[in-house]
Length: 152
Image (cartoon, rainbow, N blue to C red):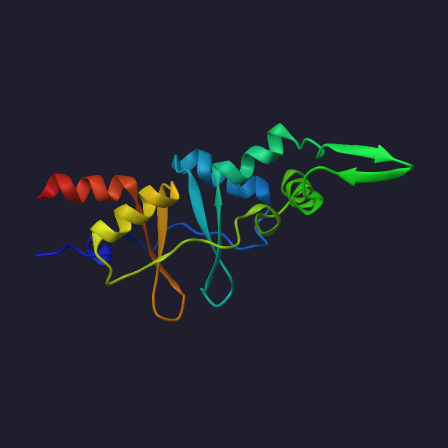
């Protein structure tokens, strides 16, 4: 019998909102020893994920994109819009300013195998689990999948 995401996920995961101060989110990650948090709006809809990777910008800062000057004009050798996004992450004060706003998700009824493949392909550690309306109902981590494998 195929095991589903619903069987392996952690229900009622710890979440934050886009308005949560960054300091508070960092404290939760450290105290709970987790590497990321789903971000929900007031209606419970998943709007993003904040992870250790997103927070690294706070410490590392941002390198300006390479450019050349020709006749008093700046010509960027990389997309300056990407630089603007990186600056925003580095200077952000709330979860909403730093989070990844296009989270990869999975539905409750999908198989654990499909979840594992998605996590492997996308190189992510956690998958928010959503219902048909996009509301967060749980989270599936690599550890959850390993525990389900061990229980077999």
